[in-house]
Amino acid sequence: MESKPLLRMANISKQFPGVRALDNVDFEVYPGEILGLVGENGAGKSTLIKILSGVYSRDAGTIWLDDTPIEPRSPQHTQELGISTIYQELALIPHLSVGENIFLNREPLRLPAMGMVDFRKMHREAERILHSLGTEVAGRTPVKNLTVAAQQMVEIAKAVSQKARIILMDEPTSALSSREVDALFGMMHQLKGQGIPVVFISHRLEEILEVVDRIIVMRDGHRVGTLSRDEATEEKIIRLMVGRKVGLFPKQDAEITEPVLEVRNLSSNNGVRNVSFTLHKGEIVGLAGLVGAGRTEVARAICGIDRVIGGEIRIDGKRVHIHSPADAVRHGIGWIPEDRKQHGLLLRMTVAQNTTMAILRRISNALALMNTKEEKALTTHYVNTLSIATPSVNQIVNNLSGGNQQKVVLAKWLSSNPKILIMDEPTRGIDVGAKAEFHALMSHLARQGLAILMISSEMPEIIGMSDRVIVLCQGRVTGEFKRDSMTQEAIMTCATQFVKLDAFADSITAS
Ligand SMILES: Nc1ncnc2c1ncn2[C@@H]1O[C@H](COP(=O)(O)OP(=O)(O)OP(=O)(O)O)[C@@H](O)[C@H]1O
Ligand SMILES: [Mg+2]
Image 1 (cartoon, rainbow, N blue to C red):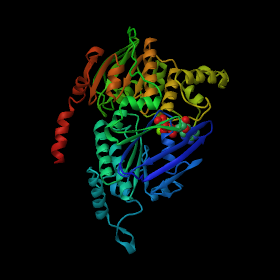
Image 2 (cartoon, protein in one colour):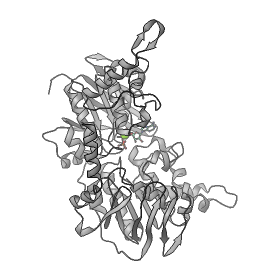
Image 3 (cartoon, rainbow, N blue to C red):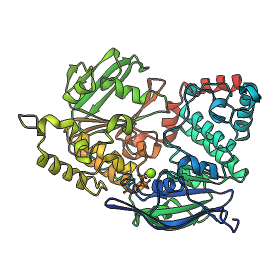
Image 4 (cartoon, protein in one colour):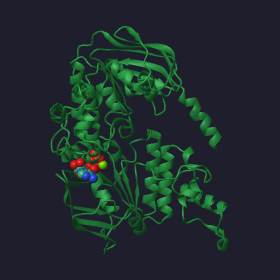
């Protein structure tokens, strides 16, 4: 490690109403390193990054770039200083091309006097930068035609073209497939090779261990430890993060009884093909597959979001026709969506309002006035049982950390007393400690007779929590395993059943 940091933050503090998000935190980034920033939900990681990138102002502390004190005033200003942030909500302009996005407002000109853009040069230059980062995307492609992963790469290329000296990434991998994660890691290594350090936040510790040179651990607004890559192990990181040992995958046996949900030859207008499976009371069924295998689409068809074009759905033995999410709720189906920001929560409303959203009718009186006392009691119950970290039930959900927002989504569905709970990537963005709690809770709910369908891209989670796993590939069921016979290899073989041919086709068209 070089001895002098490129960037240094000292004694950074930040107070929000009721929450001390950062308390005297020191932070440093060395040239050309990949630095992992880890910590539980609400530990203060994003707040630190937002202070550095000029989104939030700090209450106290000093920041130096190259020994010169800096005052990040706004994201724009910070970027001019050479600190670029790749946001989770991507900031590109969809209908413009890759090149236009990278060189927005800095387009190379052909006839400068007349302001004519040299498109050829712009696209060529865009491709050159992307290539130097180890990726091939045509400069003319409209950004809206790219996957989220490719858009992220374009954002990184844009940062590089703006002479970024440090790149900050707050949970960039949370929406990527494993192949895309590999490509992103490749890009991080290229940046490192160019001497540009990357700060990388992730809750997936195996990713952290795979790619970083050094790890800074935060807990409750403090920096609690630093580990070099060599000394770091998953267990050490967890102990620093959580302050105790965490037992992973606390699945308990539950009594699995009668079928609750039977799906027969289900096909939808959104790619589901002839899917059949049964979910029993007390059972946790994992739905595995690669990104794009049709797992979310199965859930959408069951919940009445996509149109069913063939087959049938039975609940408690009776055939049902579900035409909308409201129908699904009436039939006792709860649904924790993948994208909680878009579908799960009203971010401007409070924890209590969100928790009781699905059961408004039950706790409103004849005049349709909300019974606030009951709302508060019910919400307090879930805040306690799910350990939702919030200063009060009246906190605006947008102010909670990501993992705690996820718990509010769960509270919302549990309060509606479902028979069937469908969870799409339920622990994405949740820290290890909360994840173990969440898994214990799932197990507990199953023991009480809830039937759970869990979609997950994390193989350890699928294997650790499912009584049975159904594997999908290209909208079809390609395998089914019981708890005693599921292995990662067996699941992957089924998950890639039709994929190998496609990959082969890709490889020949690419060369
Ligand atoms: N704008 C805000 N208003 C009020 N409180 C906030 C605001 N932003 C963050 N907080 C609080 O500050 C604390 C730190 O939040 P932060 O988002 O930095 O956590 P994090 O480490 O990024 O967590 P996660 O892993 O869940 O993303 C949390 O308690 C959060 O609720
Ligand atoms: Mg965060």
